[in-house]
Image (spheres, one colour):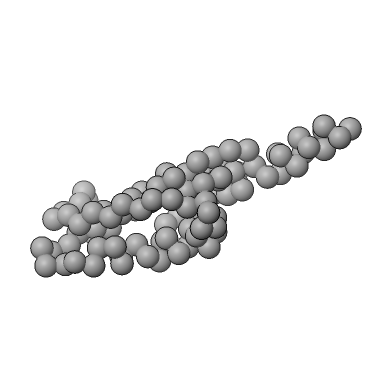
Length: 96
């Protein structure tokens, strides 16, 4: 998971107001039954960064293959709002 790249795109992770969805696709065998355990670390990281109240659903799919020979694909959908800094500046303007 590249939270740094999200931070670079958004300017700050403070703009992320909620993790809407985490999607995980992974290459598995027919016998594998522990799909839900694979993305646990990613979910724990997101809860640690954004809080449990700001994280939502998680979908996990086991597949025979993924593009370009990848073993795992992680998809994140984030809700983005104003940064905390912008809100603080706006509140200062209202006071003045």
